[in-house]
Structure formats: structure tokens, C-alpha cells
Length: 378
Image 1: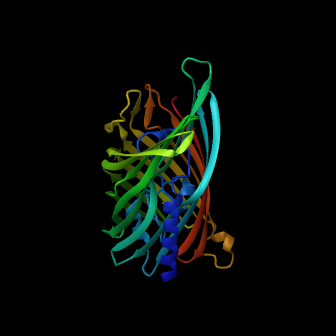
Image 2: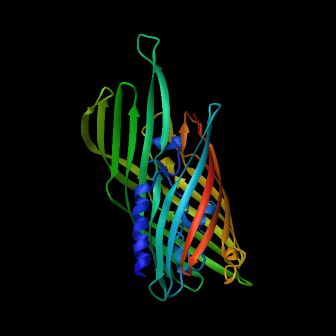
Image 3: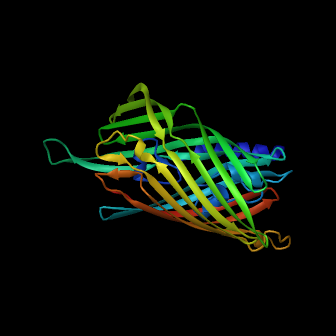
């Protein structure tokens, strides 16, 4: 137990340091970046679904009610390593990028006949973009290029509780503290400027319920609902400006706090599980239209996301052939952008694949890879 907790703490620290380098998207230039609604850990390879999945002795951050599947005398540790590749298209141009890192670490255990608990750190938002713009020097034919880059993001350190209301019905609540820093940087041959916006530690709650129905022959159908409310996030801002010829002449300016928002959301999911296969479908809705973007050209709109996933395990109880205990995961998802530019929006889709490697009875290591195509309206 002590070794497991120490490993979790080290992974927790590593995740907090490396987070927000897992993807690149021009959408993330606005606000606190792109809000992450995907599940991580084992279910990342299934497209990030999990609202309607409840499996024994697994961690599922998509729905706190799913923790009710943890059995007595089980201490579950989850370490997630995530890699991604992205293809961007717009105005007839295409670009490809790929990155990867440690994404999530979590633990879970049962603390009574009717209560289970889980703790983890998961990403909440991501800011990662690289944009360049060429302009003419006023009064001449000379051009100069301005580079705009963004990095960082917010994450949640969470504690979840799941309650067994009946044998088949469970409810859960997740209490989190939101933290992190978003950096926007602008540079050219003549100047360099950066704005660092750090989140004041903010409490937040998510909710979920699940109902599991036995379908006989070691199979079941599970349905779930999750939700969260609109939350105001206060950001502390520091500006750094310097001339390209003298980088030591830095001007620090602490501005008044600015306010960003996490949109309200609701999601639903359903899954079918047997001894060898799990298939599921999730839908998530984010109410972005209630938030002001601060721009007349770029506006927020409501966002929907649909995810389908499959997990296949040849024989998770085989004690002689380890390879039969490995799970193979596949997923596909699609979502519309929460941004409109001059009234136009885009559609994104992603393909995911992964594998789950059981290390011990209560510990597993998951690996997944996602390819996502962004189509942005510019």
C-alpha cells in the first residue's frame, strides 16, 4: 500500500508538470483554452468515453458513480500515458503535428459497504497553438513576421465518492480544485511580449448517476448521466515585454484579475459488457453560448460531442497466458467547434486505439494513441 501511494504521488507530480503538451489546436487561443471532456486512463483508447461504463476494479473519471464497481480489499492505481497526432486543415492548407506525455494518475478504493472513493489529477483545459502572420513595414516593401504561441492549461485535482443506493443504482460526486497557468507569447524581430494568466485555486463539483442491469450470461447493460454547472474562474495576469535587441529590458506588469468561465455541461452514455467485450456510446453537450467571447468576430456556440468505443479482452482470467489478459481498445469521436468565426464553424473527428496491460491484481498500465483532425473556420 505504501509503495502504491508513493508511486501515485510521483505520477501526480509528473502529470502536473507535463500536462498541456498533448495536443495543438488554433481554437485554444481564446479564454482558458479548449475544455477537456474526454475520459483518460483505460478509456482513452476507446475515444475517451465512460459515462455509461461501470466495470469491476477500474477507475473511471468520466462518471464518479462508476467507482461503485470497486470491490472490498482492492486498492486500484491507474497510470495513463497518452500520445496524439493531429491534422489541421483550413483555407486549402494542411499541417500535421504529434506529441505525447504522462496524462493522468489516480487511485481508488472502497471505504465501506456502500461507499467507494477515488483521487486523481486530470486535465480540464488545454492551450497549445502556433500561429504566424506576415506584415509589411509601414512605408516600405519590407516584411516582418509575428509569431503567436500559447502553452499551458488548467487541471483538476479531484476526490470522488460513489454511493451504492441499490444493488444496481449508484450516484457519485467529484470535488475538485482547479489550478494551472496559461501563457500567450508574441514575438518578432523587434519585440517580445508574454502574458501569463494563473488560475486562482477554484473549487468545483461534478455529479453523476449510473444504473446497471444484468442481461444474463455474465453480461450487463449500464446507462449513466453526468453534469456540471457554469463556473467562474479568476485569473491573475502578469505581462512581460522586451525589445529583441535587449532581452534584459523586461517590464513586468501585474494587471487586475480577469474572469473566464467553465461552461455548464450534461452528458449521457450507455454500454454493453460481457466477459470479453465492452461497447459503449457517449454524448456530451456544453453550453458555451451563455459565455461572452469578448469579440465581435469570434463567438462561442454550444458544442456537442459523440463518442463510440470498443474494448476486447480475450480472457482476463487466464493465469497461464499473459497476452490473453491484455485488452485492446478502439474508439471514434466527433464534435463541432465551440467557436464561430464570422458565423462559420468547423467539425472535428478523432480515431483512437490503445492497449491495457495488467501489472498486478489491482494495478494496470494503459497505453493509447489518438489521431484527431481539426477543421477550423478561418
